Amino acid sequence: MKPVSIGRHCLVISTSILLVVAISFSIAAIATPSWQTVYLAEFQSEHEHGLWMDCTITRRYSQGFINYHQHCTYKFENAYFPDGGGVHQEEEQHKFHEWHKAVLLLFGVAVISALTSLCFSFCALCVRICAIVSNVLSLIAALSSTFALAVFFISSHRNDIRFVQGITRTYEQSKGYSFYLGVAAMLTYITAFIVSILATVFVFLHDRQQHSLPINKTFPKDRNENERPMGPTSIAV
Image (cartoon, rainbow, N blue to C red; front, side):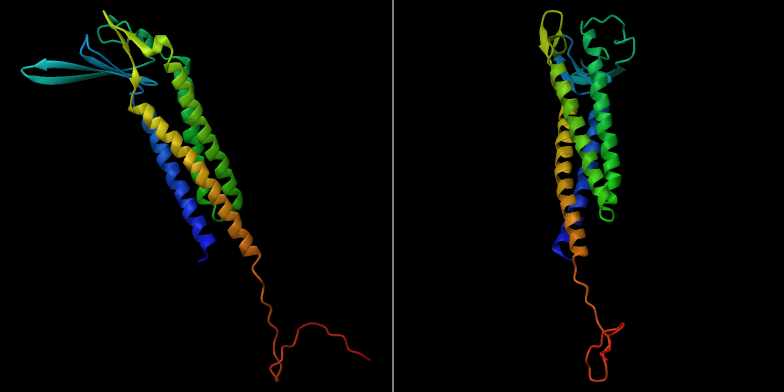
């Protein structure tokens, strides 16, 4: 097997693996609530604010042990707190804003594009046009995830989102592990796109080599072991 053929197989397989990893990171980032976290010392509770779900982790000391109680709510619910009082004065953090929807939509586009690109990459070794389609879809996934993180980063730095008002103190939110899962997904999408470009180059190089191979023509030999061409011959008169 020639180096070009080996290279195209390795690059196509690498692209597929990177796309699977990126999709996994994206789904994990969307599903988990820890995009922004803040610890409210006054209430001994940690608040995790995600794209569509929020969780509150309360610490309670009992007989020398620390008990953790977690309560999660959806952003599109009307009741944000179990007691309905809203004593934390952070209702703004639990609203389902338009930028939350935009981030979810962009990550959804990235996942769908990556899945479709993965399907086309399986056919890239046999059909050249599939390699190009896979490149375009990988680029869409990379751009969508980049725009999603840009929208989240800019929106999360608004004063009404970035800072949480307690009873006597103001707390600043920090990025949680879900945000970094999104960053990992974006970087993996970009890497997959670059590798897919290289894979496409090798696919076309291999196809060109296959079409440029010399064709060896053999002719039947006569009794004197001389090659005799087939077909009509001219007879001089």
